[in-house]
Length: 111
Image (cartoon, rainbow, N blue to C red; front, side, top):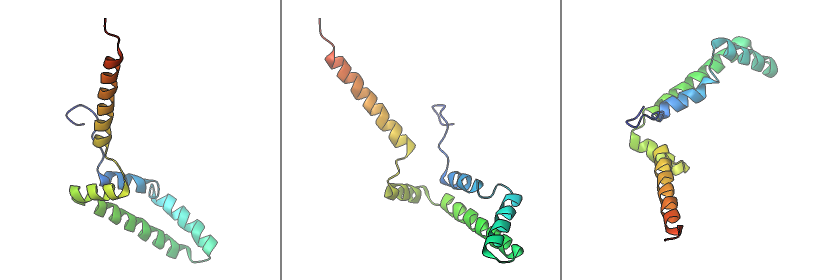
């Protein structure tokens, strides 16, 4: 929570790890995926299991790298992608609400 009592935004590392969560929920799920792929591709099951585990470990390492980026680097990456940070969006929403309020005050008939 931040000082206003609203939930704090998640770090980039937390978001990346959450995205990986669906792919690596359990060892059994990854083994089942590997078994299915091995059957379809026609290679040995243990080789495919190893490849799937290596891939998941690689994804996890990449997510940790993203999470360790300095704040400025993460901000630049988001800017390049055209992603607006939550605090910027909240600030704009507040400014629009203030402008709407001022327009309503100006539109009121004076007596």
